[in-house]
Image (cartoon, rainbow, N blue to C red; front, side):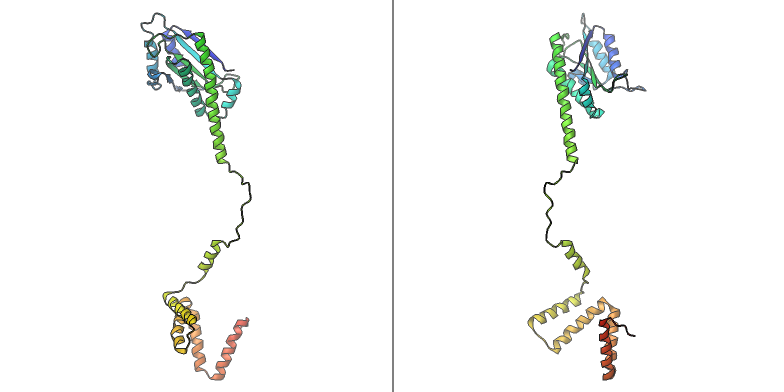
Length: 291
């Protein structure tokens, strides 16, 4: 069960000191640090956490009132809910409690106005226990004196528990959804293996082939047309063969030069020597070495 503590007093000076207390004098603050102050109602929200302006407004609201009443609430959560808050970081915890305080007083005590601060510290022997300190102005938003009955205070307690649990569940769902988005889902069926040849192999085969130059491409196309048309003759071979030799020269000049030298030597040599050279040249294809 959530616990809501409600007190009241009639001193404007004490109210100003309480604002200073909930902003500074609590565990976990050092070297002049302060907690953020939030407003309840349009007037106190417009101060945007200005501590001096808030203290001044609380004192001025007590003027012309014969017996001003300052209500102070301490809104806490139970141990189970505090344990659930440990799954959130400090920023999300303060956001949940801040929204819960605003929605609680908007639904259970709409005309009130004042200031509150969110605390997340524990006690000497208690772990972090998020809670909120609320100080209400002695005047309502319409200028009338503030008065809260026991029934209204009980309604504040019930609404506080509802809003805290609702906001906490919303943040837990968001964390769970984000965790599921980061975790890859296992496939229900194994991946289908394609029987096609990967395209990368074809690309590698094309890259392995040596490109033809423009002259070689021209004579290659001419030779292909000649084969398709079944045209032959020494005169057409004489036109096609220079293009093939030119392509070989452009690909491997050293090998082409050796071939031309060998052919020239065989043409100038006698027939017997020429036949012997050609026979020896054929043995190279069998893997025999010769000098």
